[in-house]
Image 1 (tube, rainbow, N blue to C red):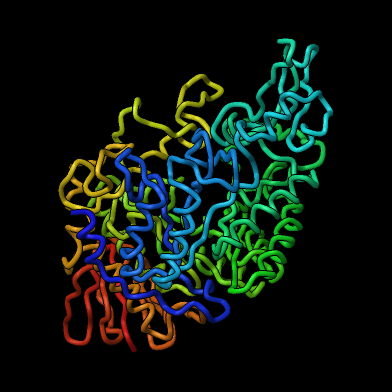
Image 2 (cartoon, rainbow, N blue to C red):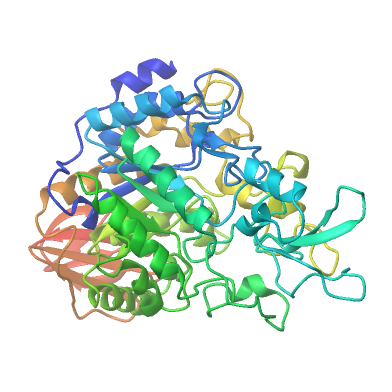
Length: 553
């Protein structure tokens, strides 16, 4: 059944992306590899499974696919703890599978972006093993942040920094003779020691890693924690707890330091030395749109994720403010803005928008999809978004694998610190078919259980159903290709009642109603697509609550 579905989906190639600047208005689909498609029945998604499902993405109408880490890793944090940056973990396949995926994607007209994780390695990386065996001050330790502890016997961490996952950002080592040793820095899990980018070896190594994957044919990199590689000189104390709540609201001594931009400039020069517009995408948390724009100056990276938009509440005035600030900031440096609603680290937006009603959450999610695809710039879709998948909120504790869930907060409560520890809920494997042990995810089970209700949300169930979320996305992406006014370019706001956004682009109008009741407006033009059924009166149209419509003018 799975193979039949795969081959029956449309395989029309994505729009031609050979002209310079393909990324300025690209729609990029995030594949969380372990949860996308499983080819070998072990319950975990892999590269071959992803390759077999690429026709779904080409038929959906996206331009590129972004793959989360598939490198050799102990999987302490879903592959974001890398032990070998040039090897594919056997869990996900082989280097040959990666090569086959890139080639197949290109045949379908899809670009391929892969993750690179430069802020930290795995504690199983050969470098870190060497560092643990080295003496304090030794050359192997210079690649990481090792420091003596504070206190009479070095029993206290070197500073007050906290891990994003909760608890101290430092772990004490044990010397070969069994006595307590130095501490090492890890802004995430203890199994993810931070690399020291003051080390020339670190910089040279990552230049080599980027070249390795560019030579294999990838079209760019999503740079994990792009704002974190440089730490403030002296590693100063912050002076307060609950530091994870400060991320994205202010510059911290371990995040968004100005020194990161020198690294990104050097990477831009490396990317530009390859043909075909290879790109760098920053996962960067910055306190303002203006600081985020620094990452996409003409000599730095090509895109940066717009987390201000992702965090925006379902409120027309707040949305308009974030959109204006984003466009102004990126426009000041000549870069496109990105729009993203969900990813593998946050609660899926149908659940975030729900306010206690799943039906309301789905309606708002469908409307938000049309809004984002109408805005100038590039859009990112997280796998399953096109199916309207909600967050899975009732996973048993014993099945969870998010390391943040197992960290202990300062008050001693497990799973309640740093990131909220419930990222597994957005990582449940995709449903491809109505039936089967894993709804077509693979020939075996799935590493996290899928709700029974996902049968009706599967690709099979929604394909051809005119009112389905999948067909809404397919229709919107097809129109986005056809209409010259969409993608990169100009936008202006139109007058609209409170709670309603109306934006104009060449030959096009988008109307969004964020209110809980319908709104009557003059008919803007010829209806192209709507997230909910429209009704008409003499010269006016009734826009349903929590809905969005596209119009040709």
